[in-house]
Length: 71
Image (cartoon, rainbow, N blue to C red):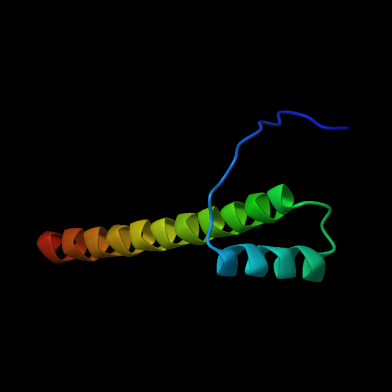
Protein backbone atom coordinates (compact mmCIF):
# COMPACT_ATOMS: atom_id res chain seq x y z
CA UNK A 1 0.00 0.00 0.00
CA UNK A 2 1.53 3.28 -1.11
CA UNK A 3 0.84 6.40 0.86
CA UNK A 4 1.94 9.99 0.62
CA UNK A 5 4.10 9.43 -2.45
CA UNK A 6 5.29 12.15 -4.84
CA UNK A 7 6.93 11.78 -8.22
CA UNK A 8 10.14 13.71 -8.86
CA UNK A 9 12.93 13.48 -11.39
CA UNK A 10 16.55 13.93 -10.53
CA UNK A 11 19.57 14.65 -12.68
CA UNK A 12 22.65 12.90 -11.32
CA UNK A 13 26.08 11.97 -12.61
CA UNK A 14 26.77 8.50 -13.97
CA UNK A 15 28.83 7.71 -10.88
CA UNK A 16 25.99 8.69 -8.54
CA UNK A 17 23.52 6.57 -10.50
CA UNK A 18 25.92 3.63 -10.34
CA UNK A 19 26.29 4.04 -6.57
CA UNK A 20 22.53 4.42 -6.05
CA UNK A 21 22.00 1.23 -8.02
CA UNK A 22 24.62 -0.57 -5.90
CA UNK A 23 22.92 0.63 -2.71
CA UNK A 24 19.57 -0.54 -4.07
CA UNK A 25 20.93 -4.02 -4.74
CA UNK A 26 22.75 -4.25 -1.38
CA UNK A 27 19.63 -3.19 0.52
CA UNK A 28 17.30 -5.40 -1.49
CA UNK A 29 15.16 -2.38 -2.31
CA UNK A 30 12.74 -2.30 -5.23
CA UNK A 31 13.51 1.09 -6.74
CA UNK A 32 15.90 4.02 -6.52
CA UNK A 33 13.28 6.19 -4.81
CA UNK A 34 13.51 3.97 -1.75
CA UNK A 35 17.29 4.42 -1.75
CA UNK A 36 16.86 8.21 -1.79
CA UNK A 37 14.29 7.93 1.03
CA UNK A 38 16.61 5.79 3.12
CA UNK A 39 19.65 8.03 2.57
CA UNK A 40 17.61 11.14 3.40
CA UNK A 41 16.18 9.56 6.54
CA UNK A 42 19.62 8.47 7.75
CA UNK A 43 21.09 11.92 7.10
CA UNK A 44 18.26 13.67 8.94
CA UNK A 45 18.71 11.35 11.93
CA UNK A 46 22.44 12.10 11.93
CA UNK A 47 21.81 15.84 11.73
CA UNK A 48 19.16 15.72 14.41
CA UNK A 49 21.50 13.71 16.65
CA UNK A 50 24.23 16.34 16.19
CA UNK A 51 21.75 19.11 16.92
CA UNK A 52 20.55 17.29 20.03
CA UNK A 53 24.14 16.77 21.23
CA UNK A 54 24.93 20.45 20.69
CA UNK A 55 21.84 21.46 22.65
CA UNK A 56 22.83 19.15 25.51
CA UNK A 57 26.35 20.61 25.52
CA UNK A 58 24.85 24.10 25.55
CA UNK A 59 22.59 23.14 28.43
CA UNK A 60 25.57 21.76 30.34
CA UNK A 61 27.52 24.97 29.77
CA UNK A 62 24.56 27.02 30.92
CA UNK A 63 24.13 24.97 34.08
CA UNK A 64 27.86 25.20 34.88
CA UNK A 65 27.79 28.94 34.24
CA UNK A 66 24.70 29.31 36.41
CA UNK A 67 26.33 27.22 39.14
CA UNK A 68 29.49 29.38 39.09
CA UNK A 69 27.44 32.58 39.30
CA UNK A 70 25.59 31.26 42.35
CA UNK A 71 28.84 30.60 44.23
